Image 1: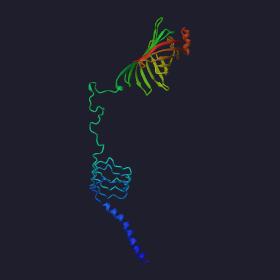
Image 2 (image 1 turned 45 degrees about the horizontal axis):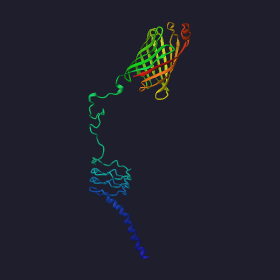
Image 3 (image 1 turned 120 degrees about the vertical axis):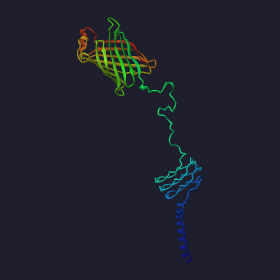
Image 4 (image 1 turned 180 degrees about the vertical axis):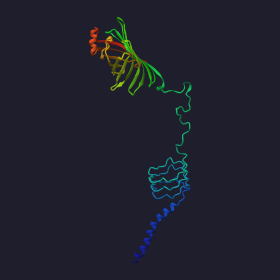
Length: 360
């Protein structure tokens, strides 16, 4: 019983000393001077830095040695480091192999002072003044040809002959061509279509226009200009819209206001049904309408004529040349049928056609 009473105070004092020792160690570490610490061989895998290190002074720490083998995988830096002073830290050494995979730096480090940190070895900074010139020449001259220009800003020209064929049953040559000069935004266009009789009087019926061309949207273009009709021997003011309708149908709509007040409307639609890289089937339909009667020229009010044609073409020479054969059909509409019968003219006609289309 005496031994038991003496042992209780001894055990109590020992336990109290064990509890006080971590507190003493923590207090001692808070005033440590890290000014000349060499951390090149330290293992940080199980370091716990979750406590308060706000009062630690790292102003004289020198970390320029080789720290490539340092392991920070277990470091816990979740504590408050907002007041840590790193103003004198030198981190210019090799830290390429440092493992920070387990470091927890989630807490507030907004107050850290990095004003005097040497980060000269890190990638970045201001680029040289001549790193890249605005025109991507990098100081190399353009040579004898001068500065290159964008293709869209250069004026170009083109010729497109959509139809140059012979109708065997009608003994006539049909033609349709379009020439232009300008850019992708503004062009001047000369267009003509008609027929040339190869028998009897060999008449030439044509409708020729000179117009200004401008894109209206992605798929549609506008035209405006003047025109001359040899069949009526009259001039006119022309305006039209051309482009690609849904399902890739090439569509033309042009209106002509003649000097006598007559208005002519031409509507045309064309589709290219491609069989392979060379063979193409092209169905085409055209409608002609007038605003008032003109018996001297066999014209009646409303729709006057419908023309259709189906061609089988073979594209060659980079698709710039395409010979074709086809069948055409023409018919009078409305009161024009009666007018043509009175003049002993054909109301309906069909013919086999052959010709060529090309562009350059």
